Each structure stands twice: as C-alpha cells, then as structure tokens.
Length: 149
Ligand SMILES: [Cu+2]
Image (cartoon, rainbow, N blue to C red; front, top):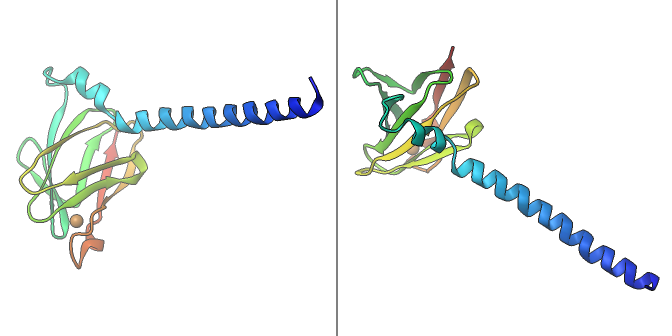
C-alpha cells in the first residue's frame, strides 16, 4: 500500500477508536448516574432494610421528616452505609433536590411524590441545593446532608 493510503487509514481508524472510547466512557458514566442507588433499592425493597425519610421543598427551605415523626429544617442526618428511601415532594412551587457531590438531582413537584434511594459510604457534610428557580429567595435554599458513622 502506498504511504498516502496508510496515513489515510490510520487517520480514519484512529479517529474512530478515539470516538469509540469517548462513547464508551460516556455510556458507563451515564449508566452509573442513572442507576445511582437503584440496585441497592431494588434488593432492599420489601425487606424493610431501609429507612423512609420524607423530603419537603418549600419557599425557601428543605424540611426532612424521619420515621418517628421528627422534623428537621435544612439538615438531613443519615448513617454511613445505610440505605434510605427518600420520598420527595413540594409544599408550594417546583423545587429541585440537588446534591452535586453525589450526582443527585430530583424535582420536587407539588402533588407528586418522587422516590429516591440514597446510600452514602463516605462520612462528611454535603451541600443540598435547590436547582430550580423557585422565587426571590431561591438562593437561600441551602441545606446540609450530614453523613455520620
Ligand atoms: Cu427551591
């Protein structure tokens, strides 16, 4: 084969290999984000091996309700490695429950309950934000996720 052809094929297949690799890592990443917590959730569903926490968005704070009825404001405390089922809704307008470090974002819509599985293996404090503009004091909707243990 002449030199020009070899270069042409190298360029074409080289580019195809790079694009294929990028497509592969994108697909793996999207799958991981999409299925965050779902595998653990499916395994635990019906076994009671999780705790249910209700999450209410409202202008302009997050309210968390634990199984014993206790409510906290702008502070969600969970145990490391334990599985939680968060049931998310809104008391007024559309909000969005967003934890950037964990790649989690669920809309909180009045009249609807969304289910989200949460299991965090790394103790620490994570920011919970509202990712949907919900009014003049939207920027104040900051809460903390505290993972203990
Ligand atoms: Cu909001």
